[in-house]
Length: 231
Image 1: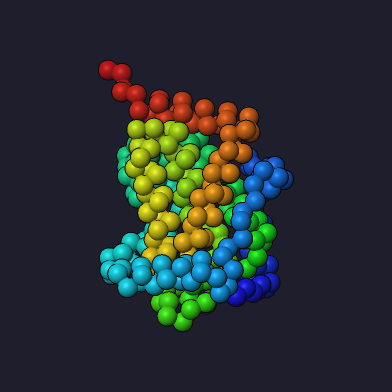
Image 2: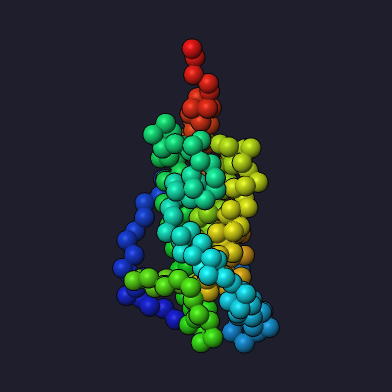
């Protein structure tokens, strides 16, 4: 089942790109279509959402709601446990880089939504699904998941700056993505597409010399912030 709420889509403001060339991304990567309605894969998607629903705890939904409202900065500081090492006041260039990349990823995800078509959310496909998070004022398509795409790219970027936290960052990105299924907002295939999109985005970012220069500057800034103060 598909639809195209054009009024809702038109309500989304445009996002300027800082580092990504959308044409390059489109030429290098195409998302596969989501499982067709009535297929065994589509049924497996719904079954997975309902299994999560049957076993989730109130604490899981509380975690999902908190996570959904965190942007890249609090996600890195609070959720991914970078903690005091992630100090916006001491890392202005790093913060600016992360926010710019986040905006780029949001724009890419919107483009992917438009290219792939309007996939309905699990609750819109199956009345048994009881979402733990409201969809919000503006409806958006399910495929791929913007939250899962964004958190995967956040983890890839932050891992370059805090390589000792790579495993924790990747684990938290996976948890953020899983919470979207657990809360009934996305199908597993939405998450798989998001992971593929995040990988493609990161590959394109690494080809951009301006991004690479800013990433190197952020590395220097992080190292300087971590250096012990001279007596």
